[in-house]
Image (cartoon, rainbow, N blue to C red; front, side, top):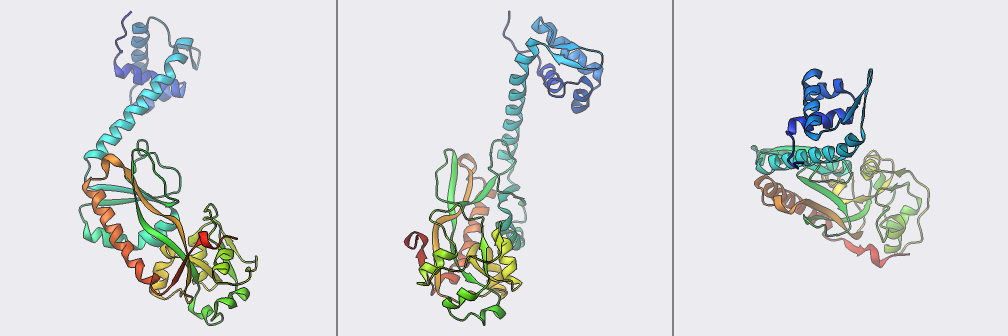
Length: 315
């Protein structure tokens, strides 16, 4: 018996039929007639010397041989599709797909998109706002921007682009009511739960300790997303322990102020991540260089502040 593979068209017809358990649906997926699909599967069964499907009145089911072949066929075509997508991306120098968290996309990337487009008109920039784990071999993504603790990931190029720090921020009208840090004991504090995974924690109790103050009240609105807390602070709804990455635009426009000198720093940072083998693609190099230039604009907001690592004020 020869181990030579049968034609891929026949295997593709089998894979579609095995996934749908229907010749009609498989034919529709492959844009062929049911008769053509049935012919391909019959030729495959002839090559194998055994049936792959049991033909019932209005349905089909896999034989033992079909059940053995189906997982390998599905995995094989999935691998081929992934390789084809990766190869097409590797030769594409005009499209760049970036994934970042919804908050970072809305508050930091999106407001700057026009500047990148002006500087690089030949590059089509696409955004995917999500926090789910990326698989660069499966997903049509070139670059991921992620916030978290430093780590090494085999096969990936990673570079820090923004070192995060936090300080109390509020609308200008509200700031007049709380001129000193100690006054925040009576302020409506806004809490962010999306950074609760950080160790040590970087939150209101940590900032109050850094300021040499008694523990803060536990009351106040809680937000699952930091950008929503920033929006609430801009509207005058309370004081947010603002992250510079998400609040910079509001500080620049005067919608928020950061009146106190004490800030908390964390080892967590925003990382630029891409496959090691693609880091030198022109559009990826251009995007990273642009990101680094934009991140430098955050530095002046840190001048004159007393930046205390969260690790030094753990309770």
